[in-house]
Image (cartoon, rainbow, N blue to C red; front, side, top):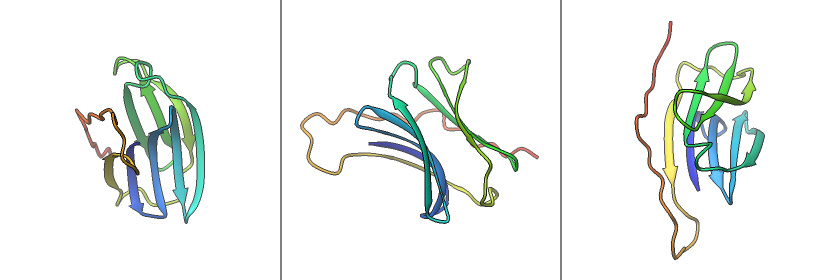
Length: 112
């Protein structure tokens, strides 16, 4: 499993998760989950971007880091000013060939 999220706490977050051949665009607000997902394509979903302002949280993916596809969008119901970035990869059981996750060029920008 590979996870990238922006979280206020364990019950309030927005993120991407790749698991069992699917990519999930998900959120949890006051503990209630919301999710969209599709078949994971490592080439087509090579880059992930999570954008947010006071009006929308937008999940995007890209094959080249230049042309982006909106995968999901929600109106945020939690404050976005104090989110913490979380990156994670691993398995929940022993796996002979687990693969790898590479996190590179992570950029956090705050826009006025």
